Figure 1 (tube, rainbow, N blue to C red):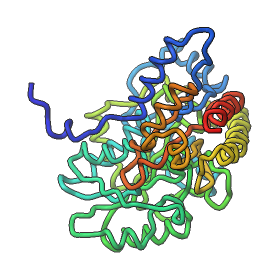
Figure 2 (cartoon, rainbow, N blue to C red):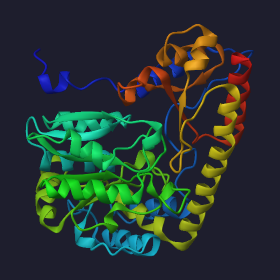
Figure 3 (cartoon, rainbow, N blue to C red):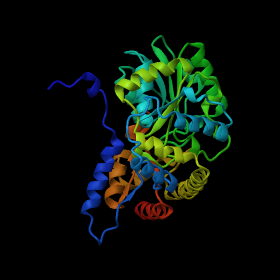
Length: 394
């Protein structure tokens, strides 16, 4: 059977490849062994709040399980619009909000709608691997621009200007970022968007971790800039609904009918049950619980990053959001006698029973030096992981 070149150009998702290996090892550990601590997957250990679960149950009992409009329930689009006003003091017309089957579907729709074959999309190295694969699936080319700690591992306007050429279509950014947990400074984002707009390009910003910002300076949506920003968001991270597969995108008004037509054909509609449940995300009690959980994620960051530094795993930039630590393992590799972060990940998995993600997934510039820790696990799990890694690297 001949496989399409498009499919062959999509690399494996190494986060999940490592996860499979960690899960396989975990299954054969005996009661005498230390159980595996999983710090490799970026999934909150919290689940949907009680009101959200109750709303899902009510929707099922009421038979609200049939197709919805391709753009999503009008009342959910309105709730999200009100949330932008309450949270960020930004007015976003509900008609510009399209509900999607997760942020992945939103990114897929954006790329299919806007990327032509051989178009180039600039994004930082490191960045979330699936983002570049959405570009590849649309037959475009993701151009990874190496970034440094001095740039917060984010693109600058100067880099965008310097890498722009006749084939460049735009930029795909993430703020806060996976894997670094760092955000783009609002002033720099404004400058980037100006460069892109002056060239007739598109600015797409993945904001799925934005509600999990810990510093006011960075807790601002890119939608405040103008109506030409395309923002991607999700109910997975802040709203703790990973497996419900529900997200949304905010697009310019002229793009709504295009995205709607594509969504009708590619997805029909997002999950009806998940949409009815998500209405309860914006209840006062749910928001209060989410804010408690955001404080818990911040506390985990505040403990674990210094712990990594003590162990000898340097985190060059303190994450200002999300739940990740992008750690330089060069010194640790030398201690363990391994050559790079890929080998380091398997070494600590096998010897300390701590699962982490090597940098290979997130780019090429310094991938061999870095590993990503997810701090979305409980504080107890983070303490255990720090103790085991400390003992291994002592």
